[in-house]
Amino acid sequence: MLSKIKFMLFVILAVTITSCDEDFLETKPTDAISANDALATAENMALILNGLHRGLYAQSQTILPGGDSNRAGNHYWIPLGDNIAGGVIHTASSNNLGWQDETRWTSHTQETSLTSELLWYHRYNIIASSNAIINKATDGSLVEDDRLREILGQAYTYRVYAYLSLIQHYAKGYLIGNPTSDPGVPLLFSSEAPFTSAPRSTVEEIYNQMELDIDAAIGYFENATARPTGTADAKSQLNIDVAYGLKARVALSKGDWQTAADAAVMARQNYPLMDEADWKSGFNTTLLPEVIWGSNVITTETTFFRSYFYLICNTFNGSHNRNSPKIVDRRLYDQIPDTDYRKDVFLADAPNTNSSASNGQGGFGNDPNYDNEDEFNAKRLEYQEQYGWTSAHNEHPYMQVKFLQKNPGTTDPDDIIYMRSAEMYLIEAEAMAMMNDIPGAQAALEPLGTARDSNYDVSIYNTQESLMEHIKFQRGVELYGEGFLYTDKIRWDEGIDHAADGGSGASQVLYQNGFQQDRPSVNDDWIFKIPQKEIDANPNLGPGDQN
Image 1: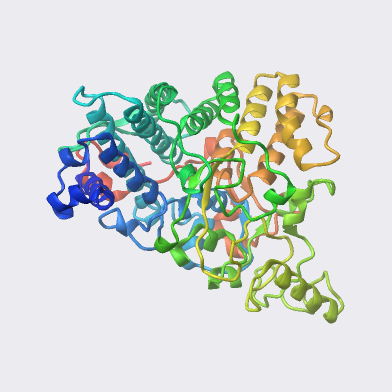
Image 2: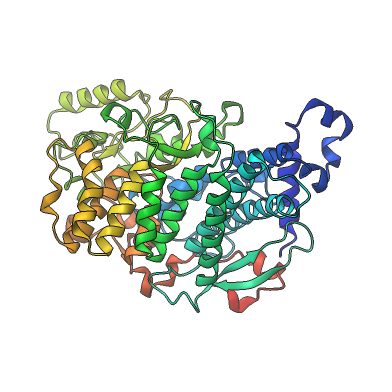
């Protein structure tokens, strides 16, 4: 495959090996570490995994040759799923990092864009490093003990995570296309030069490999050292629960409903649903009881204005947030019952203080919700004091306060959450509904619904159609801003229409191409372009392979 992967792998090795024990460093300078040395023991392999953990949120130029400081791994990729799909809505022009280009659909549709290029290489970097561990740990040269099985479980799980990301972005959705013939992405099994890979495998072939890998991961984890508990950084490590969660996601995206339901139940066993106080605490730490997996962002390695919370959190002290508070789709908000405490994190009565707001209603006198300037200013100050943003931050009706910094009004980093037990309840419910198991879907929804809504009654959703509509609503509210809407819409074959049903609150002038997009089954613009650099350099790909 592309020779860049060789360098990506060794960057990970060089970075992670610097944490090795003192004796090792005394005899092996960090600029001369070979792959054999880095893979010589389970503990050295664990250092590679630690590099992958950190690489999930590092600025790309620190792990990818030719990377760019405007992309910091999952700080960018996670909120991208809601940004492209129109779930997290911009209220004013703000083009930092090219974030506005994503909303306008002028980034992932270009083969030379940073988004198309760096997501591809970041995920293949994970695959190459995972391959290095898998190939060495299974060649018979090391004793397979509990620790090595833990390392293998994580490596196989990482490989599934990366392939699932690639196949869901660079290929047509499994449920809306022809997976046996639709081109997927190249399979890569090597971990050193010449990095040979197949041409683009079919979508189904990639899914087959993911299924083999995730079952292998679970098998290794079942007889492995357990993941530590009690600290935020512990949840950066992958364990059997993460593997089951990914198995559920793979199966859901494929329409393997029973497998999705069963795996989701297994994944959530040790992660109780949050209470109201935890749910409203800001989603800023992996210590929350629902969190199955997430990145514990190390303060000394903060990405500042490249972070997840810079792109999603209305308290973050950056021009992107101050100028353009992010809001919820008003049509979703209007569905939330007053008895559901999640409604409280969307401030419908926040005054529109930005005179440059894209809806043309910014500043007192233009805001139709206030005809008294004292009340307008009092409400602005009330929310400023309550949530901790600065006097320079603008406010906007329906702005979200689901995501809150631990230290509001600063540029301090916060953790990134990748997987929660609430998602697993929703996966089980959707799978049951799709199998037309009405009681099963209701039973899966009931714990989550009653935990969030004091007046919840699941019995009123008693048909497959009503259940699916309700599940879509629940995913929209519960998982708002956590990056799922893009893949949800592909699975459900739903387009984007900010104008429909009274409007979302987005501006057509601001959103341009992203204001309306036809459903994915008839619109290939949902598929990311393969990087042109990959087409040019990979002998297994040619111009005809471009999406």
